[in-house]
Image (cartoon, rainbow, N blue to C red; front, side, top):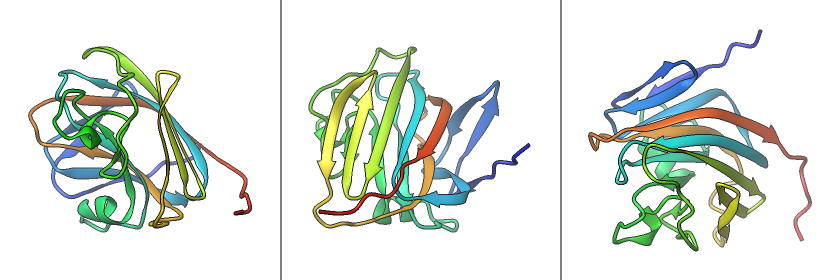
Length: 175
C-alpha cells in the first residue's frame, strides 16, 4: 500500500474524516509532497457550506517550505470563491488573479461540485460540473510544473474536498 504524504504550510489545518478534507483557519496550504507534476489531469470534488466560503486548488508551485504564499506567487490558484464577488477573478473556476471564468457553473451551497483542471504546457482548462468555464494560456510561462495543494482560508466559512485524483499526461511538443 502506498503511503501518501500531505504537509501543511502556514497557519490552520485540514481535518480528514471519511475521505473528506475540511480546511480550518489559515491562510494555509495543504500540499501533496511526494512528487510534483508537469502536464496532468486533476479531478476532484468540493462543497462550499456558504456561498462566500473561500478556498483554492493550487497547482505547479515549488516546495513552499512553511510559506503558503509561495504557491500563490510562483504557482497557479484555481479559485473556489464567491460567485457575486466584485472581482471576477475571485469567482469559482477563475485562475486567480489572471483569468476569470466565462460563467458560473457552481451548484448552490451544501452541494458537491465536480472539477477537472488540466495544465498542459502553458495551456490551462478548468471544468466545473462538466462545463468548460475557464480556458487560458499563460503568456508569461510562469510555471511548467510543481506540486498540487489545497488552500485553507480563515474566513469562518467551510469548504470541503474529496475524491482528488491526478493522472499524468504524456509530454507533448510545443509548437
